[in-house]
Length: 214
Image (cartoon, rainbow, N blue to C red):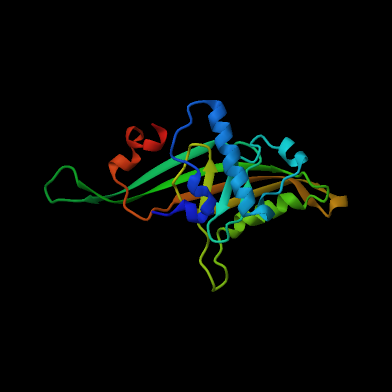
């Protein structure tokens, strides 16, 4: 099990991420406290102007954290999420049997969604930088380090899940000649695969046994 107090900094030990807030005010207070503590740890990655906050529907509360470099990318607008689960079943043919036997050989959990980035900076470099940041998660760091795993901070969803980025597909639009044909907008389709250290059991998956949401 990954110790997120080490990933996000020692000061996070006093933050209770597993307790479900009972009111909207409590949720807001907890998120502000978490973001404040993150900002103390990594101020160079959490600077936001008032303009950037106003042009976002997430107010910096939804974001990715790359777990090797610990840098962060804010999600600008709240996306729709597509959760997928694929079971791999092998068919075993038995002579004389009308139907085959079925053997579970493994499976895979995926999360796909589309991100919308809209330029806030006058030079329009912010959109392409965000796209490149996401694309970098599908690369090894040369021969030095493997591709980074990521944490997706999305409220009370995915509180302990770790993901690997499987695919990043981008559509760039609204180019301007005076801005070097840099895009003003980008739609990024991203596909994540769940990465677990242990083999999940039924009780790990079912909602009624998830103490975080009870």
